[in-house]
Image (cartoon, rainbow, N blue to C red; front, side, top):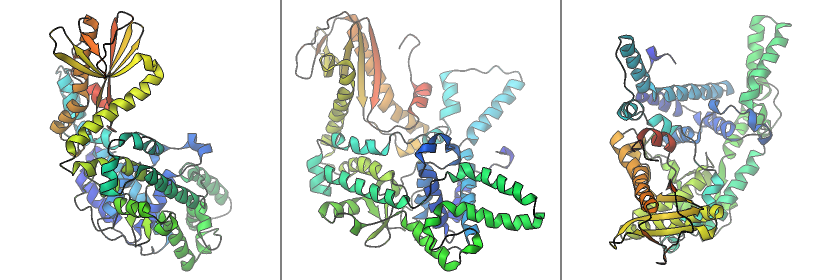
Length: 502
């Protein structure tokens, strides 16, 4: 990327919106969505993930798309569809680089200072100034991985809301087993539709195919003839994996007329469409579509990375009373897992109970996972550590013992806020303290209590815990129940600890 001609994130987003609101853009977007999220598992080791857009990047595109009515006007020709697709990748690549420009400018400044003979320090404050301040964490947070597989959201759904089921049923008609059944039915329907497309790994195989064709053509045709033939071949190859979506087979761009292309575009959209009538008709299905769908011409406050995007809480886009457009299937189980928390937060009378439930559930899940490693007899939860003065010094969410070693686990349920995701260092610091630093500090206190051997430890039933061996080392684990983007990077930069502390 040439930093001499760099543009700001805001400038790039303006161009991106203009592109998204182009007539027929929806068809280019559907090609991107299908090709970047559907893979042949036998060739998954060959996938070039860097050339594909992520869930967050595609969510950004759709978040802008729904700010207006979706324009389903058929494009003027298939070449135009491919051009819009290529422009999308180019702008998204430029957008990615724009989030790194503050750090690029800092590197340039540091090099200039170094050349002038200035000694540069490497303190924690220096690291924070470089990596975290001035929006330095926006890029690693927005471009971090998804955190979990989609099936894991459903796997933990019952455990996450086990104490909130009555509220969810009464206020949102949200019944966990029925919700899971509906999500799986939608996923199965979309998978069946996707089987119409041949998963040939277009991005990986396309350059090789083009090069082979070009070599053969050079032996038979002039340069001008080759250009014309290549254009036809380019279209044919680009749409070859979608041949089942055409009413007739296509071997080149001239082989299909407008009517055939229109049928293709309709079938392409249908790959992402669910009909409510195709899912079991009951009160649970109706409430599901009510809770997790929305109509376009909204999301006006969404302005890019770090802003609330309606697609994340309502991933089904309503086209009419029966049809719903689902651009990213992954977002459905994610929304099902995350959204109920925010529904309950809006109920001021329920907030205290909600907070208590979150803490209890976090401890229980941690206990369940760790007891399978250490054994139930060596794993404890909700521990109180009390000195001879009689006042609790600290509490330990989960404690695991293995011989003379102990693992002290502190569970937090702090989320990363929108302001932090947009680059506010003050909010980032506050969120980090609530999710990580507080857990670490509490872990240090617990560690000292155990190593000094002067405290009394009682389990959740009030029974005293007797250690079979003298504990000579205590390891600290901080655990967050929430998906916390770029967590390890933030810990490396921001954790405040003394040199002699673990």
